[in-house]
Image (cartoon, rainbow, N blue to C red; front, top):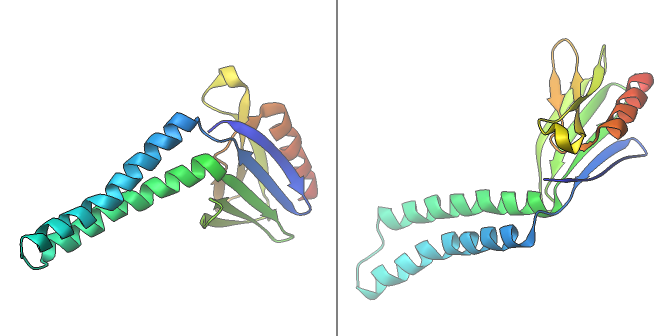
Length: 161
């Protein structure tokens, strides 16, 4: 996901990603709808042939709707995804916000914490991520932002703690 922007609002650091290209999202939505419809169509087909429900139908719902849920998460992340870091006195909380649900909640103690901005794998884009670490815990952000902005944010957080 490309960078949109990162900002500190109150005691929260919010890193937002930009939307992925529309053709990719449309393709993912089409695959999601197919995954949702396959078990329903199979159920209607079996019921029309007067065959009762059996274990295969329930397994197909579980399998295809599990894939559908995973695709829904990917679609939401690539459309609305953002990371929220809450900077409190004794800990920093991380969560990935998919707009309709939140995932990946983690906490790290601020005792002896070090925040570092490191460049992403793609050096051509000049983006960076934040790494929060102390003796026992470690949190990496996923969404990239301009490396110089991330370095400024890391310096500000290090001053705070």
